[in-house]
Length: 368
Image (cartoon, rainbow, N blue to C red; front, side):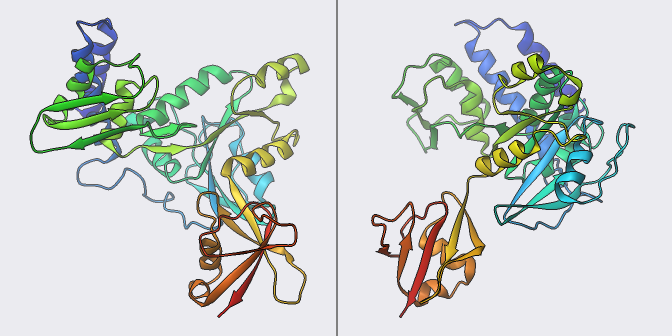
């Protein structure tokens, strides 16, 4: 029996099993078993992570990467070509794009790489079509654009989410606040600082049993935590990526229908063909990537606003700023003067390497 067949068998059994107190242990085991089988698809034996292959190993450029994911013929290639000026084959015929096509768009001075991925099909995470390679590339991106046909957005959205979820990608989520620590003896100890509303002790023990963890400390600090969240923590190979739902072809619908589309969370309706609302998409992309622009100020000169240093929020200290210019600068720095949102004074603040910078700060480095 193939891995895909085993997955189908477990899923069928889960669908047949009613969730109640008597079945929670069994369902916990099934969820853990399903995750282990999915792992075999993500990392097939005798191979890497399921990605790569001709046309899928792309040299990374720019400060961040955005992957275009969607079904065939939803307008990914048209949007890619107009955004970046890079030619990506456009046609009404399905599967025109057969490899990853890279391009670059500059936003607020930051070069951002765009990756037009081949159209995926239902069953991609089970290896149908080129789905495994497509999703494996998507796992490496900083942001995913899920391109949807505006005439059938919700059905396609659900299918694509399931395909990405099955490959260990968690969209617009943060890692669950759960810790699992293996120990040598003492059995299973479970503590929780919030009520357990979607998982019970039997289900937790069942998941641990499937992973042969008979001695472990489990701490749950997240309201609404589920068995799937626990499995994600144990598996440890989940990728948490922000996503925007790009609802394409709005030139084919009415204003009233457009208002309804805005109610879909993380959605940006556009028309790539007529270049409608693409400016909003670019701004949403910038916001979601959470990038920070920092400008340099040489001694005695005005700040250089033409070439910002681009940092990722969470890694935007003065030390990160120095390292992005040259690794030796931090060692030579005596202090830095910062102007902008992170400074306490409008006249500038003298700071050290651990000072956290904000977007559009200006920095002068004083060397020893």
